[in-house]
Image (cartoon, rainbow, N blue to C red):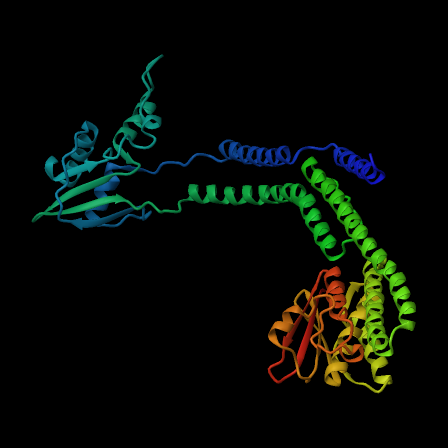
Length: 465
């Protein structure tokens, strides 16, 4: 087995070992199950407390005498009865108790028994009927007082009922309870429900937050990694599912960084080794005809510059960066002041300080590349810095000739030059904008180019704020 294969196998084994070594904790499924179970138990406990502590509703009992008095006067002192006139003849009832109550009311009003129809059991057994029905005597005879109480209950109406009284001419006076939708008993139930909600909601919120907190931490760590590929590995403590995801993510990050470093080192080595054959070609051209020598030396010199620019680009992209809090406006002022000291036409629009987290040398080179391009191709540059919600925007614009739409798309490709001349002083190497985009994306942002409506170009850099 080759050394590279052995190293790869060893790294893979180490990565798999790191993935397996996970902190032991409750699985996320059990945490969610426990949360739901605790919440349901709390609700049931409160319901049981409601059953024990809150008294049942007390039925309102209407005597036949009270019904008859309300039929004569139309006034109920407690306002618990209501009446209306109907032309619909009520259906006769099949209940012996309803017929007996109707006859009692008719006798009290001095009307025939057929003139009063009571419907108290039309929708089923009356509520509390069993509770109010006299029990079957199982012991000594009941006393006279208890007999009178049960007799009074037998001659009373309770629950939903309708009493229809014939007033002549096909018209019937209908009397029924004036039951309120929100009675006292229902109000007590609603108040108890609100109390239960106030007790259960904070507990459920705290438990749910404890369950999802590791997921939020994992999301924030992944976002931080997207901004800085060389960020510290994730160190999350939580359910095994989250720990496994964090461990696998750390392994993936390490593999990606190792992959990029290997490819970058290969490119740098190739660029470095190309200088030796170029040097030999230069020495051999000394004996060539002058016309051929001059033309070839120009190509060799251009190739040497390209190799040097590529090595510098690779070196800048692979160096270790140190992120820190910085004032982007102060950094931009230092760059524009350097250009202004050389006599270049560059303006930085005034504004408030913009504090971000970034690498000072990289961001300074980014702004310097954009300002340098604007001055080179348009003769001047205008720099704007502002905050747009949760991002910071850097705009460098000019009033130059601009670029073709197709060139705007390819402008950030390495070694692309919109100026097609072979003169490096006017066309450059073609790595400036590629470096700009690489720095912006390494900070979690991006870089774009667009044509200004009034003419010229606008380079926009967006960075996390």
